[in-house]
Length: 210
Image (cartoon, rainbow, N blue to C red; front, side, top):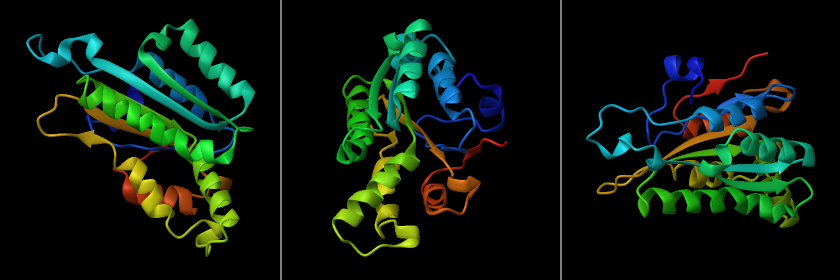
């Protein structure tokens, strides 16, 4: 990631899924942009395919962001040259709710093509998964489904798993998909259903403290 606190204390292996737990007012957007600027492969030796810088790609999906945040991501990537290596998906807060639900799936389908057809090592950054879960709750309420904890649908664990579990490697293919989903904890509550269920599915967490 290029962030020493993550690379030294919580190194991310290829095919892993490590979420970043943040909260309102914390610089998770800046962290996401910094990872896009600095991320790369650990290069061991020149005689392996991984040595090539062309073998790395980033898929970035932002869900439910306002215009200011969308402009920040786009301008940051363009100014720092990240756009040449990033496939960007932006879902705005005023876009239809159903588009917010499909955005991470479109991003991961793109990542799977790059990883398993183009044999690249792909880093997928998904932000903000809390916006995604809120959209899931909104659609569930519109369908008059039986609510679960705090009004979220009872199948939210399964739904989140269908996203997070698409990280990994496939035997016989050189590519990989590594996920860094970012979510904001409502009221800084790590026991809230969104971070709670995310923690069960993923492999450790990076916690942004105040």
